[in-house]
Image 1 (cartoon, rainbow, N blue to C red):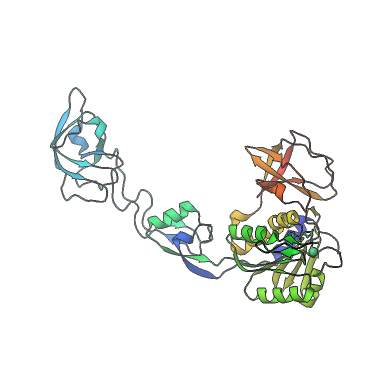
Image 2 (tube, rainbow, N blue to C red):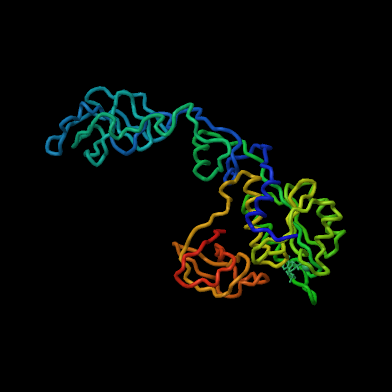
Length: 401
Ligand code: AMP
Ligand code: MG
């Protein structure tokens, strides 16, 4: 099979990816990062009453016309109203109500004079300035009016949207079900953290990298496990995992070695192979298939290869499945503060850190088996195939993680 370009591989995967349409109700507390499954209309005005934007006195603008520090207007204070309370009193000519920020404006008043333009009087108050009608006056419904469309089905809910939903008094909302993923790492050498490390073994880092990254994208990981290099056993795991997953992800065993069992696994499971090999470094040998119509994406076991392919190939699939457009791959241009002298015949991804329009390549090795030098990185520099070198000060394309 010929190796595909990343764009071709992505297109094939996306053409086999369905957006999840099943909905569920969740608490507003859990809504951030979820996709709204209903249009949201305002069921009330916000604010529900006209209110004061400052601490001062609710007055009639007519009464304080011409007021100056040298020529104050004196009004009788008939009540005091704090936020969360109401007054039944009406502001008739010559009267004022002491009012605090957020309190409903009493009937009769058409403006609020800030306390700094008064003598802070209690029984009577001296007003030192004039203001116009409806100055310092927050209108009922000025945020939104009853019936207004506030949020649209398909929107990704962030903290602000959660705040708007809360302002409506909603505590449960309807969202699309999150994608469910199964993650299986393969390799006779793998031990889990907490186990004793025997000769020839290594700890399984891919399981942690993949599962935690998927969770950070709002994916529900319904299966996670490790299996030895035995095609039948791995096939069994995948068969079981698939019962409760929309996407299946494995690491290890996709190259051309004797123990690269994933090819046999695909046969045992009677999968429809989509492609094997993408023209990118790291993670060239990625193998993709459909098992019972579900994407089965088999990543290289090399930790950096697995991490990069999770971002480049799997993330777009999950973005489409979930409707999380905010997960789409973001590329930006930045000035490279490092040099990179190796040429590659395929597109290469170099771990780096980007801030303020500048990007710096991580210290240490960029080899696919090396994970630790990726700590603290927030992006990958994308170096097109055949680029002879990157020099300091050159503008490069950066994939944000
Ligand atoms: P493979 O893709 O199975 O040929 O593995 C490539 C390299 O990655 C080997 O050195 C493996 O030991 C290592 N490797 C495979 N799986 C993992 C894993 N889950 N965690 C850490 N390293 C791994
Ligand atoms: Mg292996």
